[in-house]
Length: 288
Image 1 (cartoon, rainbow, N blue to C red):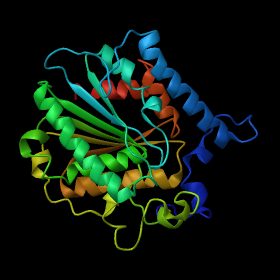
Image 2: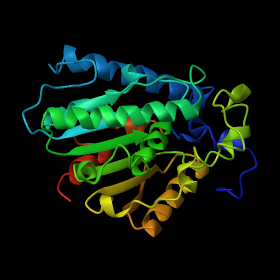
Image 3: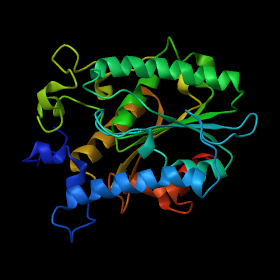
């Protein structure tokens, strides 16, 4: 569908097979995953042990009154990862004066994907209540992989995101996301025993690529960045490119960027480095 040359959909929906790193290892796809888990957990520990950043349940850094807020939603195919592997992005942002909220969420099959998306809507309401209570000056949201998929709901939740709330959102950043679930729904490698709870009835309602976006004007002041990594799978890259096109045609201020040299995982790992390409990109969002 998104990669006409693909002969192995299972492989194309597993980004770890497309890394160019760890080629000296017997199984580079496993090595890149193990490295990601190890490095991202280390980044989380270093926040308090080496960088002196205070950690609360859902907030990093005390921040100043009226400080901007950065909200990050991790990936893991809605089945894996947690907040302990989602802290790479925190340090450079806190040093630039942000408060940072990292979302943890229930994983499938503890919940179905539909239920998880409902819970994410509740989280959005909570985070905006928090911004109003603490006088946050502006909010930037970013989601990676499955987290980018979840984040797309922010554009469709008019009952939660009022016009006033949308004006607080400086930017939305979709990193290496998956936005059309029709192909992966039947892949046992991605959706074993249908733990995501997908079927013909709900597949369009859980696929942001297929949604009818009607409440566009309230997002006129928000910039949307759809990002893919050069060494991600062709399907992931093309889904991102196509999703940016969908949003632009609907009238959103959306752009697509392909980050050279990165794969699905080090694009997150290197957010911990102040002068990395991806950190500079996030920094430039502030001034555009």
